[in-house]
Structure formats: structure tokens, C-alpha cells
Length: 408
Ligand code: HEC
Ligand SMILES: [Cu+2]
Image (cartoon, rainbow, N blue to C red; front, side):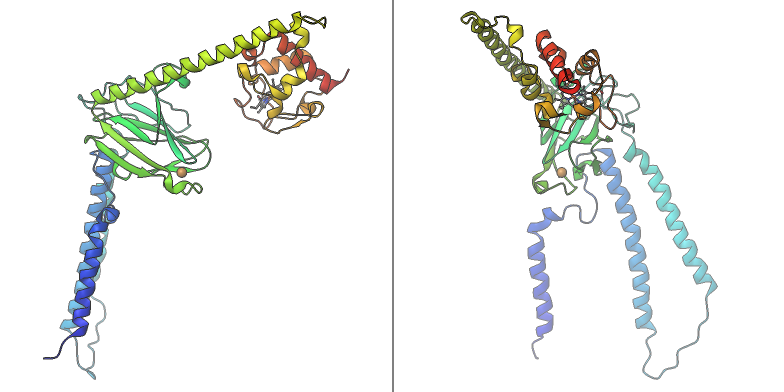
């Protein structure tokens, strides 16, 4: 018997391929069907729906393909044979038309049945975290789908180059004291989590494969999704929209822990935020006190004009702001020829303040959102000048701007 190199070669190929595929199994999760695993109903329903359609597809593929192969073999004829002339077959034609229609009807019916589970979140379970009603960052025109009883733990997911920030909704209206975290989101199990998904700079895409579909994070728009994890664990994901050169490292993970553990984590985060806010306030007060002391000490020793009011320079405030109290420099956003600034975040003051009264200038500094300049958005110009500038500083600034624009 002679050796069979071809057959050995094929066998060798199969063995090598299998050996390569086994360690790579992890990388192939989700190749056959979308992943699930956290027990969240939306991901489970997406996966089972997919598998059903995939199964039907396999039946059709192997049925039709098998029939063709069987026919080729069964009715093969030698060279020169005259083929039988067949013209149409009503029973067959009606059969495959009705068969295909029935398959589509079946798929549609099952899809609509599953859609409720995929789209609409259920209530949190009794052993989940007790969340208050209607606490959420629902800022967009689209409305989140909330569970029937309206209770969910709402988390704001903010995509930014190149990290995810999560802010947990709470019951007060101050968004600056909310618990937050980066990269890893910690959530309680058996609790309905609703996500408000946004982007800070460019488009990103929120994607934790085991927890259901992808959702685009679009600047200026809020998208909503949800999950309800029953199995504790860490579920990994990745930004799924090419967002710049750090995109590949823009990972995300969701860590599901028991509600009791979640409460501990939440309290610890809250305490850390309160502590660092206190620290910042102390440092700020110390700076302000130091400034005030210096101001008090300075004018006494010289014969120069004494009153501190005279020392306030409106132009200086315009160009440099007052860093100690957090008053941003006007010149960092506005063009004003006299001050030599040419920023364009806000309107050019030379243009819009021509002919305006000092009172109007003062009002627009104190309350920037009251009248919006055409083509500019609200909430960009700081609204804190009423507190970050003293009365004397504000008056000097208004006087300076008025003179710079309107002369005299
Ligand atoms: C962070 C950027 C920023 C800073 C800092 C800033 N502004 Fe503005 N400002 C804007 C923007 C944007 C607008 C247009 C939107 C609006 O009218 O609120 C604006 C509008 C204005 C207007 C027109 C207001 C109106 O009602 O139409 C005036 C006047 C003005 N700024 C003066 C100032 C002065 C004076 C300062 C410093 C005390 C200052 N701005 C600091 C961004 C800024
Ligand atoms: Cu991204």
C-alpha cells in the first residue's frame, strides 16, 4: 500500500487548527451568538432569540444544501445521457413558498414576544436594593423606559476621551456632591439599573456584551438602557465607537455585588467626596484670608492713596480674573480690544456692548443666562460673579468694560 500524503496533510491541518482554537476560546465568546451571563433578562432574551433564528437558519441551510447534494449523487448520469425534460412542479413550488412564509411568521411572532423583555425593564426583586422613586438624570428629549413601579437605580454614564465616568443619582438637586466612579461601575444585584448615556466630547459607545446591547454615547443627547443582574461578578466591556487614539484602552466594567456590599461601597465613596470637598473649602478659605490680610497690611505704610477700593483694577480682573475666589478671567472667553484679549468662546464685547448702559453690563455679568447672545449656548459663562467678586471689584470691572467699549 502506498502512503496517502494528501489525507495526512488534511488531518495535520485539522489538529493544528484545533490546537490553536482551544486556548483562543475566550476570544471567540460571542462569535456564534451574542453573549449573556449576568442573568439580565434583556441580554438573555437577545441571545435566545438569536439562537432560535440561527437554528432555523441551520435547518434551512442544511436541508436545502443536503437535498442538492443528495440529488446530485442520486440522479447522476454518465456522459452522453439525455436529461429528462421537467417543467415546473406545483406541489413543490407552493410548498417552498408557504414554508418560507411560515418561517418568517414564526420569527416575527417570537421576536414580538421577546421584545417586551428586551426593551422594558422589570421591577427590582425583593432582595434587591430599595431605590427611591423617580430619581434620575433624565435630561434628554427621549424618555427612559423605567420599570412598572418607576423605581430604579439611575446612573449617568458619561463617555469622555478616553474613560467612562459614572455618576449615581441621589435625592438632592446638587449634582456636584453625587457619588461617582471611573472605569468600573459598582451595582447591586437583583436591582433594576437604568443608565442615562451621554458623551462629553466625541461619540463613544457603551458596550458590556454580557449585559445586553450597545448604546451610542452622543454629545448633546441622552440615550437610555438598563440591566438587572442576578449573578454577582465582574462584566467587562469596551468603548465600541472609534473615538480617537486612546480608544483601544477605553475599557469599562460592571461589578455586581450584593445590595449590602453595595451600600458599604456607596457610603465609602460618599465619605471620600465629602472629605475632599471639606479639604478644598479649607484651602480656599485660607487663601482668601491670606489675601485679605495682605490687602489690609499694604496701604497703611505708604502715603499713597489709602482706600483698598482704589486699588481694585477693573482691567486686571478682566484679563486675569480672581483665582483665589474662582472668578474666571473674562478675557479667557471674550474679545475686548482695549484689554488685548481675542478669545471667542463668548461674543466679542466690543461688538455687543456698543451703546449699552453700565447697568445692563452689570446685569449681564451677574445673570448671564437672563439674555442669551444669538448663537451662543447658556451655562457656559460662569454665573458666580455675584459671589466670586466683591462689590468694589464688580463695580470697577463694569466701569472698566463700559469705558473700554463706549469711550470716555
Ligand atoms: C467661560 C467663558 C466665559 C467667561 C469666563 C465669561 N463669559 Fe461672558 N459670555 C460667555 C458666553 C458663552 C456668552 C454668551 C451666552 C450668554 O449670553 O450667556 C457670554 C455673554 C456675555 C455678555 C452678554 C450677555 C448677554 O446677556 O447677552 C456679556 C456682557 C459678558 N458675557 C461679559 C462677561 C464679563 C464682563 C466677564 C467677566 C466677569 C465674562 N463675560 C466672563 C462666556 C464667558
Ligand atoms: Cu470612546
